[in-house]
Amino acid sequence: MADPRGFLKVRTREDRPKRPVPVRLMDWAEVQQRQEAGTLHEQAGRCMDCGVPFCHQGCPLGNLIPEWNDLVWRDRWDEASERMHATNNFPEFTGRVCPAPCESSCVLGINQEPVTIKQVEYAIGEKAFDDDLIKPYVPQRLVGKTIAVVGSGPAGLAAAQQLTQAGFTVAVYERDDRIGGLLRYGIPDFKLEKSVLERRLEIMRQEGTKFRPGVEIGTDITWDALRRRYDAVIVATGATRPRELAIPGRELAGIHYAMDYLVRANHLVAEDHVPDPIDARGKHVIVLGGGDTGSDCIGTALRQDAASVTSLAIGRKPPVDRADEEPWPMMPRVFEVSTSHEEGGERTYLASTVEFVGQDGRVTGLRVAETEYREDGSRGPVAGTEKVLPADLVLLALGFTGNESRELTEQLPVELDSRDNVARDETYMTAVDGVFSCGDAGRGQSLVVWAIAEGRACAAHVERHLTGQTRLPEPVTPSERAIDLSL
Image (cartoon, rainbow, N blue to C red; front, side, top):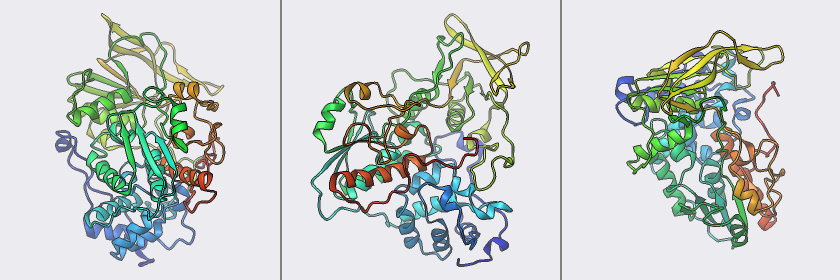
């Protein structure tokens, strides 16, 4: 390392600054701003000469984190960008929206605050675009094989870029009106402005990737017809089926899945015509679920000028510090305060929703009770603790239960696994020859870094299937998982 004693000189981490809450609630621009160059230099210098960099195993992409930390410290940005793009197609995305499991695995994090890896990653991505270091990689020759990628989220885009650069003719199909999938309509602009997505898509267009938005495979084109048209098909449609909450009153108007709300909000921010908007203005909003999607709902509702926003979680409040059963280098389940939580609203834990209360067909409140943990490991409401919380808009951010795969399984003999994900073998191939599955579609709901890693690995197996060989990287296998001692 450039400064092997840097972590002793600078003992505290300093992340990217944020715009003041009253200011950022007035618009949809990104909350976090660029770090001052001198501070970034100091933070990159905290990366220690640890011998075995566990940050490598913390990230499924296998990012060369100590190398590009060192190069940023030395102000060699072009080389840092090369190192980063060697393992990650889209550092400008992960530098914004990834929860950074690499930082949980940082060796320095054993007895100090970990290195601000995500901050440095973001800075390299922005500097690379600022200095015009990101050039389209156009293959010198074409292989003569065609590939369809269905779904334009991070997994589909990563697979498409890898295969395009390897000389394949790749078309990406997306049912929405614009390319981007989760990156486009699932993540609010205050976390990822869409101009960031557009500049990367333009690079991919110049490389030769073809984009086909507004085409729903299974309806506009059958899966069987698509398979016959292309030499290989990659299913990267995500895990988009939301988890239901089947309790009395669910049929009342004003209760929506979180993604239905966020998608409409992103369309409105893009100044699209939305015939059936879901607007939180002046309403008492309750968000069920304490994850990232729920957090995004909170920030969106506050920007829409909701009267109040309350987040309910059925479980216990996570601990502030790493629990004994989640030792380093695991990614711990700890209490987190997102930028949306900073902006307002109330967070309540151990809250079991018992019933949706309504009047004249619309929701007016939630009947909730305290949660108890039973001896058999189950959770449920405590009798006699019920109370009604006022609610005009309820958003269900309870996670996802698998792929929306009805047309896929009807039109092709593709199989699903026990969790309703598209089943695949260790080469990412499904039960249908030449049809592959990657990202959340095959893995289930996961992190953006896992999606990109699977897209890259799937591309390698597709190339090997079509040509008999590959030089593309294979960072993860379909069965590989993050360390979890609870399994």
